[in-house]
Length: 416
Ligand code: GLU
Image 1 (cartoon, protein in one colour):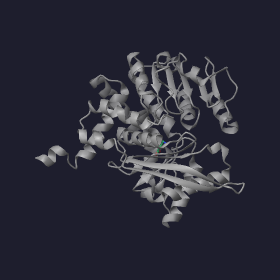
Image 2 (spheres, protein in one colour):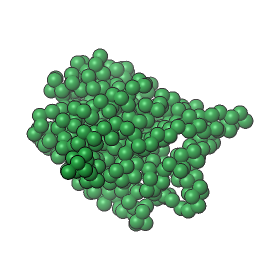
Image 3 (cartoon, rainbow, N blue to C red):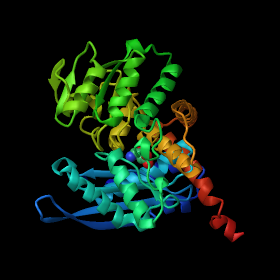
């Protein structure tokens, strides 16, 4: 992971700001995370020894609402990555218009190398270390790469113990039995699917004529694949960290999900290819659903798809964006395409605060309303300002952020 990933993320602000109604002071404010915390977490391992892990929590901006964003457990987590991801959360929440700011956390760890008991101690230790910097009205974590509902339950439990009261709204993505929302599990994939569906309507597509390749078969990739294949799209390639499989006739997605869930691996099907080759397949739609920086200057010209749906955060670098845009490839950017997850997290937080649980139908309907409205608003803005969709999306988000920041005054107001 490049250490300047935060600098590169922030650098995209300037270009977008040219298309937004935003004061330079606000742009400058957004360059600086509001709070950044680095913690050490001692964990007693099963063999009796103590290991000390490094964790982070960043609240990038909370002008529009409490910080919001996941916690990642991954060996490549870094301070710069957490700051970049927190910045993207600020922009993501503003893109879809939910009243939350941006936050992110992480621990440098390969969770697959820990036992369940070690993982629980690490998760609780992390919450103890950041407890005074998160909270239902401060900063609300959630799952991200390699974290899940059980980890959220441990963290919620630990936080509730520290503050001495039941506090489900401190964290989202919890098990439904502990205040999680119906529909949170598939929300990221579903939100991306709703974006694709809106695009298909605009372009008059017949899903049965379109092929999809998905890099990454975790939560987001699996649910997107399932929803897309249910309406007739042909998912011809999927991958996990071990490699990819490709079958031009289309893969059996239900079978792949079942095998991945039970064995942790993809089922044998079609031919085996590399993750890199998957990105360059001549499919209609490419869905990066794993980690950052996979579409770069060196492979962007070889991308065969005409539409990229970014379910991962930050999969495309800025130079690659330019190459794709020049080639006429539409990139539905991460801060819109994967915003379904945080949107239903916001629903979960709202349900916890009100003490009232919504039905699955209500969750789907509200998510649908938000994703369709914001996708079309960003698409319309793109057509008006004649840019790529990412620039339009940032401009759309910056307009909302600007209003919230600037209602409290700018240099111009105070000078008069
Ligand atoms: N980790 C997810 C994201 O990057 C979800 C965050 C949330 O639900 O707060 O959007």
